[in-house]
Length: 112
Ligand SMILES: [Zn+2]
Image 1 (tube, rainbow, N blue to C red):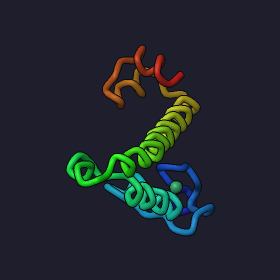
Image 2 (cartoon, rainbow, N blue to C red):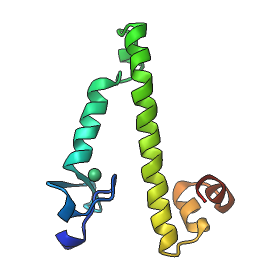
Image 3 (cartoon, protein in one colour):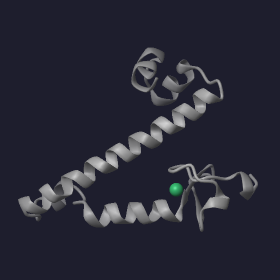
Image 4 (tube, rainbow, N blue to C red):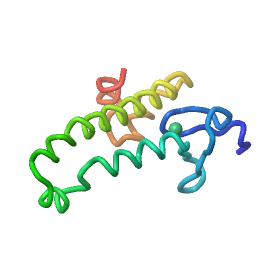
């Protein structure tokens, strides 16, 4: 794949619009420097999981709730954008649902 056609799999910005673009997995997914910075901020600000939660105060855990929700919402927005892009290419709800492990109907209800 030519660098000029690459884009961040998270925010969708083209390689020409970001400072750095890092390939992951088999080279079909990429993440830009801005999204890495966002992820790093999330990791630093949010409790890691149940093992970490036990060591945190209730105030710390409450303070992290909003950031956790924002992370979920941001991820949901990226998922919707990916699906909108695929629909724009003419892909069926059946194919999109199949990729998500849900029915055509469930995909349409969640993402149309
Ligand atoms: Zn990005």
